[in-house]
Image (tube, rainbow, N blue to C red; front, side):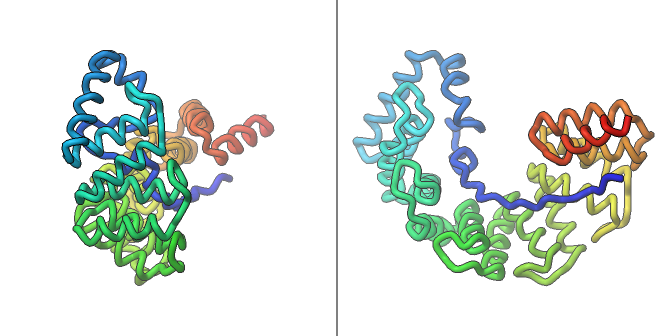
Length: 290
């Protein structure tokens, strides 16, 4: 019998793609060059980069940030993380908060600059003090993970709370985890479920999947297997591996839906293709049992 497990892995959403949110940014930076070239054309991209260069030279922080993104993603210029960091710094010096966050991430990861967690934390703190939600979330992650500072779950929860209060989905999810585990915050299943709901509504699919488990088990909410099924479906539709696996389990055991072995197998296969080991193990176990 397979158990439904939740892997509450809170990652620093400081993958550079997550922090680089502005009008010209694409969700997946590595795929951006080909998509951008297909949409705009190389000549137009080159023209835009030229505009960014001129604007940055004139001291326009937004244009320095745009130029940094171009070098970070290799858009109409050779990809150059060091140059990207230089332009992030120029924009950050002019209080462009998104650039400060990205520069902090560069120092956290050692991309384009020498890895320096303490320096990274200083940039995150700068943005948080300026009431930037992403900055507060990243400060929280630093305290939660011990990046550039001693681990301090309570301090982490405080900053997750600040980020959540500003509508940051991942901040709400992380605070929910703190309440669910009693790690840095009072253990409170109801509060955790409410935070997972807020994070899910704001687009955090891991929160949707976790909330689904809460409804399935009746933890912090009234048990509702159909609601759990709907949440797992939402997460799986967004290509979240754990969501597809839990959806497959719903079909296997008839939780909120009629049992359907074929759908179970298909969903396990999808989760496995999305590199979720428990799904691959479940498929292997099923094959050996036949």
